[in-house]
Image (cartoon, rainbow, N blue to C red; front, top):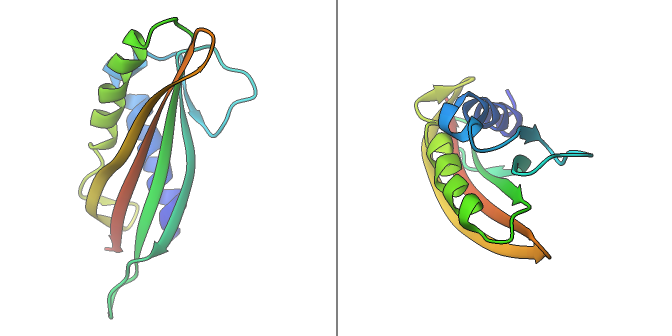
Length: 131
């Protein structure tokens, strides 16, 4: 079992399965794509630290999502952010041998990255224990 890989894969599956989100983005990418048509959602790195107990393995994970858009205003990307957040929050129960202890949106940022381009960053903390 690898919590970073297992949980990241589960989040990608949830994002790709969400009909409302799929209607708003062209694709959910597993890592930074070489070429993508905005609006697009990128599931970035997942890092982890020990969060185990005396008798069970556990991990505290940090997972980053990036949404990229090419409109002059942040209106569309602002509507995509809550859809992505709702999909990630669907990660509950036990996933691939890991029980979800908590899932928290640590920070979100909406920023202009260039002329006519916007990015949104969503950083999550996900705590899991071996089931």
